[in-house]
Image (cartoon, rainbow, N blue to C red; front, side, top):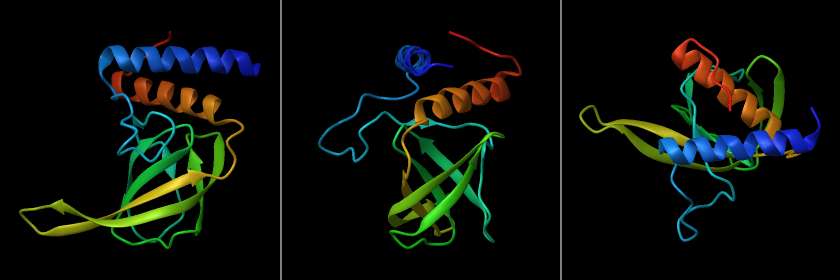
Length: 142
């Protein structure tokens, strides 16, 4: 699809997410990313590693993961998004957080920036469409 189609699809995704309250508007005082973050419900991200991880959210510029293993800032991760997209992400931060206060479980929030931002609108739109299909069992379109 031409880039302007992906711009339109991304704009529709933003409008829909605002209506449903899927994300809140960015607070420039506390937000580090430039673009809104979208939660992911499905297991649409894969990475080769020995320990389990979960995805917190994704935006045009990056992705946030939870892991029981820390990652060094500036390290590079190869991520498989959906079934079609392989992207490179650079770790920009790793912070220990409490996962379960009752069990005193700790985990790491890994914040990453995508290395190449050229196709991120297309990737984000397609990932969110797969996420909606996975959650509802049907395809939802604009």
